[in-house]
Image (cartoon, rainbow, N blue to C red; front, side):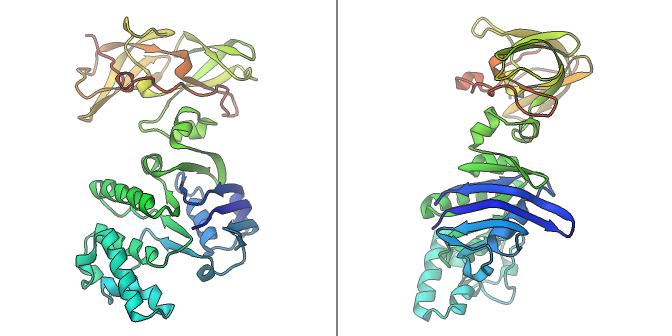
Length: 381
């Protein structure tokens, strides 16, 4: 296993820049996830690490070696693709053993290693089958097995679960987490699904337009987004982002108005440079005020849409000034379209972003207890 270091990595196709001055340090044994929207450069970045794409500038190190100009086969990496890329005429055993046979390992060693990997991935009873007879999840396990059997320094995964249905994606996600824990391997995983990123990663790299927007642990990105892009991308449902105006400010706090006249004062790390700002608040932080929980601001609104999801309820509430916010409530909530609701907001759980999109606040405080983790806003007719 090995650490991976990217320093000043730049990539362009012709005159079109795809990666711009990327600096990332990935620790030995870390599970790092690259996440971002389509076209942000995350797969290209992974391919530069594998050697399938040459960098235009910068350096890539794996362990103690500079592999910037090293051919893919000599980098000590194994890659698992979105398309399983299995040989259809070969059995599962032959697919997994292919790389070992190319390396001219003895037959007994090949069989021992393949059987060991098959047991780890629970495909030992599939070794004599052809890929066409396997389910999607089984095919993906075979593709992962082909990577594991080589004992690489670094595992690279390029959206490996995208072709699976929702239930199977959840199952394979758990299996990959267990596999990482068992192997203690360095893994780099690319996905556009921020839920995958949040549940699997030790740390996440958020990419946008070839630029690294923020690197951090899942909860760090959730509670302390560096800018508007990260705030809007991390979290499902996403953070409510509202246009606001500064009415008073210094280097410690700012008072803003939003939603047709609502006013709240927030702690800030620096004074806003312009009157126009963006106020952010997560759906689970909009709750009904009660005697057990004080609020810095209470606002009223009318429920426009209700999404009943079983375990939770999402309500879209119009709060004035053409602003609608999402509110996360419990699955047994009785909120209904047309009802009015009273919502409480805590200043310490709000975010403020300046006109350039950079965060002015340190980030929202984590919800202190499970009972406050899900909004309990109740509608009133």
